[in-house]
Length: 464
Ligand SMILES: [Zn+2]
Image (cartoon, rainbow, N blue to C red; front, side, top):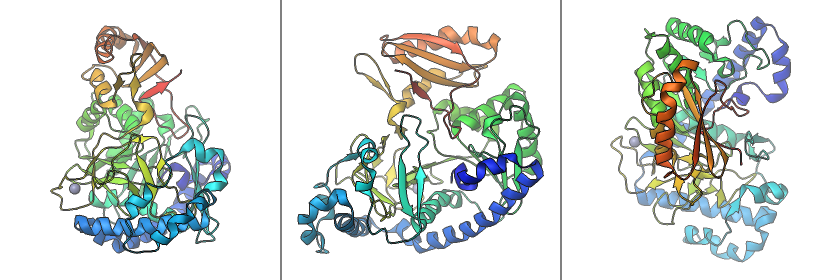
């Protein structure tokens, strides 16, 4: 669930003008809606609980059947796929090989859908209540996905399942540091930049107002209220942890788990967050398009949800592509087929997880295509390699890599003035090795790293 689900966009400007007490009341009213949604999520998760433990051949049959229906529905009702009508006869046969029929469809990119969105919308969405979600559009035009209200609820339920897997029980408190716009962003130094919703037991901490002073206040709130869980973007949890360590403070409270989503958790972030919160760090992979999702289990594996979408390569049969190619199994309003989200995903189809769930395993290396760095000779450097550059650097709170042009990189470092000089040469040296000496490296002090519209800090930013 993203911030915009807590406060609808249309209501944001009204909310921003309310006094603090009325904002708290509004959040508690949303809490009532949230509780109803949690009920719906739990019911849906009960319905699909059996999919967590099917054997592989049952899973393949289950996905193939849903895939067959998706393809049939798309050909019949989506203008873009009308030309595939010759496949209908085969698709109507329950014993048809849905996976090989899938490969008869073209791979579709975001750009193609943006160029002619109506061609991808079904004339029979199966529901009158169709909603849309939008990506923040950091790299150009925002991307809109349409889906029925029911699909949206189910997709939310799949995200919620990660929390249940890591031990959330009814009544547990959750602290949130995920870009919720609970304090007007325009207010530069608000008093108490957090809000509490007693109804659904949420502590909302403003990601936008995190600085050395508010960090101490957030840590006070956490120590006082002792929520069972804290969830956040890795970049936000990292900076809160950095401020905590800098002040020499140790928390008296310890959550049962730290949850993260929306960004990959890089090794240097995990190390710092782990030191502060001393709890398991559990991830969730999802996308605004609600095409596919994966939750991390207690054994540290990311399990695909299976019911929402099919990623080529997840079972090992069809070859995986880069970026990943995904087909919805759930969205009838805008059934995206062989769609490339732009995320790079790797699968371990043969891995057996000790947690007992048979859901396909995805490697924890997922990254947005943009998080990779390309050197002038064409060598590509994955985020996992880039993160080594930032290991064990005293005084460094957070960092961002900015590719200024093909041959120049800037390492933006959030640190105090005095802390930059001692690490700058080391950083340049390490980064130069990672890119095989092909690029000029500069080190820049920057206490306001570039955030996108939802408060996330992208690790690699391209200005070219
Ligand atoms: Zn597992």
